[in-house]
Amino acid sequence: MQSLLLFEDSFPCWDEETFALAGEEPQSLIWLTERGLVEKRGDGCILTPEGETERLKCAQEMGVPALPIRPFDPDSALWNNGLYLLMDRAFVGQYGVKEFSVDEELPVVPNLSRGELWAEENGCVRYVWPQQPVVKSFLNRFPHWGVAARRTGAPGDGALRQWAEKEQVQTGFQRFNLVLRNRYDFELYRKEPRAPEDIFRMKDADRFFFVRTSDKSPDEIFDVIGRLHMFMLAQRRVYIPGYADIDSQEQENWTLLVLTADTEEELESVCHRFSREGKNLIEPANPLFIIGTSVERLRRQKTPEDTAYDWFCNHCRHIVRPDV
Image (cartoon, rainbow, N blue to C red):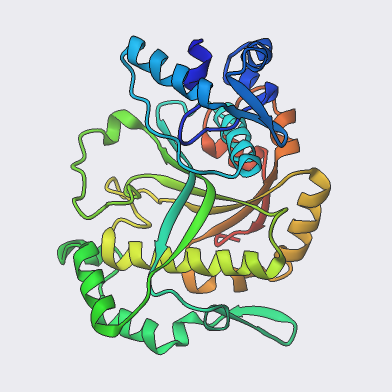
């Protein structure tokens, strides 16, 4: 019955592969199904009402929290679950801490339309958001960035909300299948004070933003890239100015968008399509890496690397790099 506790708000859908990756016997999922505690939904299994009752009972007996499970799409939830477990297996995270979040929604302010984010000119994509009047207003209101901004402090979420209300700016959101905040050298950084305005926990971490490509058109992926630009713009000028790209120990922070395909064939197509745009994809938001991987590739990797940097160098495709 303890395996029922695997079903939770972030991971509401499982199959035999994900059970095995989580260290459970795949046969136990069949056992739960036969007893009516879980039922087939798409390619995975979700709790039945009887299973939810038993999950809550088991959690109470073991003294562990059991948050309510919000509505979800089973196929997307299963895919996200598999990606998380495969990425967690991909590297150990030696000396550091891996902080994963699944299906995380991050705010985008100002929220721009596709035509305000990017345009196609002479067959090439170019990001035009710096030209928009609302962005110029944002830059004027929050002018401090880079290491020098450490002296002025972080304006914070309250200041951003005040500006947005005054300018009648709408907030948008970008949802990522998986976000990894990779906190390296834990012992060195653990005594660093938390920045009060760092409400998205981006300080002193490399950030990997994973987005599935098989359910998106190229235009939709260009949108995602642009909205990531805008999210990082707010990090650099509002939430952690002075620490968005250089950490508290004067080391570089990485920001990486990971285009994640289902198969190697799809990954090849993704890399071909987006690498031809080159640094146009990152120019207004440097430093930013765009890399690629596939679920098929992660399944083949049986031996974990020591660190995220080893995985980055040895097991992903480099689509656009700011340092090349």
